[in-house]
Image (cartoon, rainbow, N blue to C red; front, side):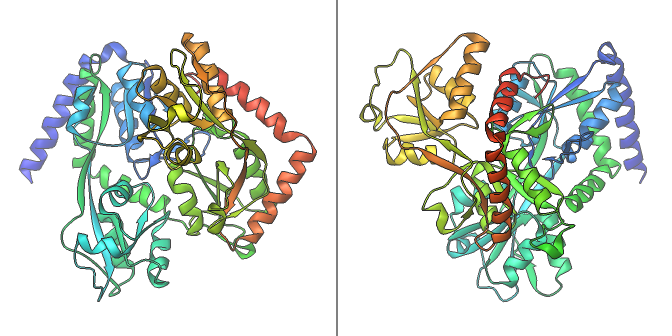
Length: 495
């Protein structure tokens, strides 16, 4: 006990020394670049006064208090967190960032503030005995954790079933839709405890990660030292465990499904960077899809809740019934209609292929076998693989990153939906004058719709009614003009 008290006093003494050295910045805003698709570390709440929550945010607020600096959160796509930190435009980067040796080349990292072990949960009596057994299993996983990429890209089970809550994971077990679940150890223990005798945790963790905050390499050394002091106090005082429990509980209500559940949230999953349909302005989700989604929820007389997830997970979450609706410019295709119920179309799109102005590419055949950029899991990536027969695809989080990839010769071309590609091209031209060239080729039109689970005819009916009303009043075109204008004015101050 005396040793623990001595350690805490030493931490507090070191903190006083550091705070004195940082006094020159007292009162100056602490700018935080924050990705919001890694619960429980950073997630979107939609609340006006606190649009972002999570363990990272709790720690950063403590850092701000100790330094006497107000915290200003800026919600950005995950990759922009690193960009803004390396360019010195933000002080702290947060997004449930896993500590990796390669990060030290570009940024400074804090000491670990949390460690997460991913474990395998199976029903008692299961034939699954180890990691290799998962290859023939249907595996449930809670969205937002680091284990989804691990499952999809390394273990490659028969099926990966993402869910938003542990209640839904439990239901998947009970309905025999899932043979196993890969969860954070805290989530796994909670599931096992709540269902005594039904499930067990397999002995060896599947993976183990440590999480940290990032800082600018040239200017962030004093801030890192101060942050490390706060982090150690946060852990020793028990605040970390309290934070984990609080956010775990906040993220685990289950969405409703019918009129009897009118008080339950209408859960909409989407990707946050797809202008003018979805974008972030002053830390709030806005855009065509957001406005229509809110009207659909009102039609259903249910409060709305947005969950920001990678685009690759939007349709699986809807198909599983974990989300009530999927949005962010989803193309309606015959293949997707096998597992998804779509609303009426509300917008049209076509593939836009962008190449460097100094390139000689002129036809689709010219790009066959080349390196093509696209957003992961989208129709544009399918086009790159199927029509352009790409040697490989390079994934970008949004059109601006993809276009920069073309300009910097990281890819031979970038493929995206015409609306976002055109807007991002104009944005880059307005920022630094650089431009790309559109390939002049004919590609068939596609239509966007909102996604629902196959049996959710009530949700589709509400969406169709709202879409018809807005189209009749000319509101969809008006929304397009409004959010195109907003996107073109975005900078760090109003992200």
